[in-house]
Amino acid sequence: MGSITDIVETDRRVIVLALARMVGAVGNSFLIVVLPLYVASDLIDLNALLGTAVGVGSATVTLTEPLLIGVVLSLFGFLNSLSQPFTGRLSDRLATRRPFVLGGIVLLGTASGLYTLADSYWLLIVLRAIQGFGAALTIPATVALVNEYAASADKRGGNFGVFNTFRLIGFGFGPVLAGIVVDGGPYDLSAVGLPIINGFDAAFAAACLGAYLSFVLVYALVHDAADTAAAGDDVSIRVRGDDRLFDPVFVLGVATVAMGLCIALYATLQNQVNLRLNQAPVWFGIQFAAVTIANVALQVPVGRASDRVGRRPFLLAGFVLLGPTTLLQGLVLSPVVMTLVRLGQGVAVACVFAPSLALAGDLAREGESGTTLSVLTMGFGFGIALGPLASGFLVGFGFVVPFAVGAGLAVVALVLVVTQVEETLGAATDAGATAADD
Image (tube, rainbow, N blue to C red; front, top):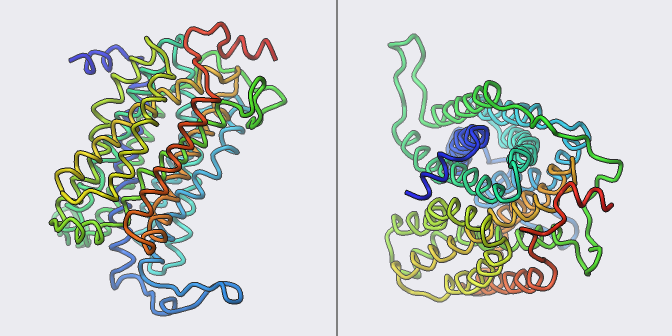
C-alpha cells in the first residue's frame, strides 16, 4: 500500500511522463523480440551478406546470422548512449525539454512503422540508427524534466522511483506482448477495409501506435518546468573532481556502465543456460524477467527511502550485492536458484537506479540537468549495449568467464563509489548553491 500511496502523491506531471515513457517502452521493447525473428525470416534477404569476411588484414570477422542480428540490436544502444551527452547539452543550452521529448518520440514511432516496408538488411540498419538517435533526444530531456519537477531534494528520489517503475513495467511487458502479437498473425482486417497483415507488420504497427500515443500524452499534458534556466557558457561533462580525483557524477556514470553490462550479460546466453541447467525455455524467460520484476517492486520504496535516509547507503548496498549476484549466475546449477540469484541482482539494480539519478540531480548546477543526468543514462545504455557482445565473446573461454568479468567490474564500481561519491541529501550545496559557488 505504501508504494501505491507514494505514486498517488507524486507530482501529476511526473506520472504523465512516466505513463508516456511506459507506453513508449512497450513499443520499443517489442522490437527486442520482433527484430531478431524478422531478420531470420524469409522477408529479409541475407544471402549476399552471410559468409562474408569483413575487417582489415588478419583481423577479420565472418558474418553470420546471429552476428547480423546482434549488430541490429546493439546499434540502437550504442548510438543512443553516445548521442545523449550532446542532446542533453543542447537541451540545456536552449533551456527547453519538451520539444526534444516530442521530436524523439516521432522518430521512434515513425521508424517503427517504416519497418513494415523494409525488405533489406541495410534498411533495417538505417531505421534502427534513426531510433537510436530518437531515444537520445528523448531520454536526457525526460529525466531532466523529472529532476526539475522535484520541488525539493527530498522529493527527487521518489520522482525517479515512480518514473523508473512505469518505464520498467513497459519494458518488461513489451516483449511478452510482442511474442503474442507475432504468433497470432496473420490478421484478417478485411472487415475494416484493410488487407491481411502478418504478425511482424502487426507488431511494428503496434510499436508505432504506442509511440504516437506517448506523443499525445506528452503534447497534451507535459510542459517545461516554469523556472527552467538556460545553461551557462561552461556546459561540459566534468571528469576531474574539485576536492577528489574524479567528479562524483562521472563516477556514477562509469559505475552505471558496469551495472548495465552485468544485467545484459545474461541476454545472449539462452541456449547455454538452458543446456547447463537442463531447463525448459520458459525458465529462461522467468529468469530474464526476474531483474525487471524486482525493480518494479522496489523502485518507488527505494527512491522514497533515499529521500529520507540518503542516497549513498543505497548505492553502497546495491554495488555490494551486484558483484556476488552476477558471479553466481556463472556458478549455480539449479533453475530455481538461478531465478533467486537474478531476483537478487534486480534488488541490487533497484538500490542503485533511483538514488544515483537523485544524487546526480542534487549535484546538477542550474540549467544543467540534461547534461548531468545524461552521464548516467548514457552509461546505462552503453552497458546494456555492451553486455550481450561481451558475453557472446567471453563465453568461448568458459561459461563462468563473462559473469566473473562482470563481477570484477562491479567491485571496481563499488570501490569508485566508496572513495569518490559523498552523500548529497541534506548538504548545504544543492543545484543552485553549487552554481553560486562556481
